[in-house]
Amino acid sequence: MKKHWAAWGVLAGLYWLLLGLEKALTGGEGALRRWGMRILLALIAGFAPVAISQMESRFAEEEFFVALQALELSLS
Image: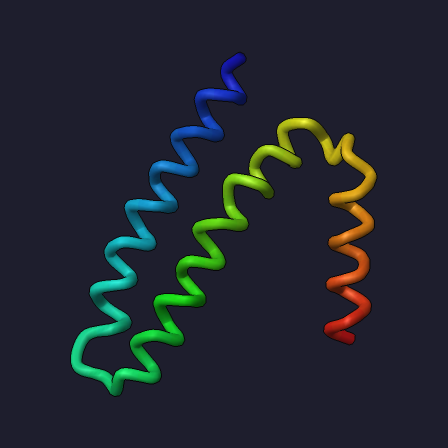
């Protein structure tokens, strides 16, 4: 049970960090760069809860592990 609350604390801290990074990374730059950074931060914010959930369940769902392997192969 302690891991569960710790994971939520890490997620809350990550979102707090992402909000601060959004202001720092998108201030005064071109519109394309601002939107690109916001999209990247949104992807991180969306992936983080899934990753934390999978780590808590020790990657019990085989489909998620296969998707990670497919991503790794596509990047190499």
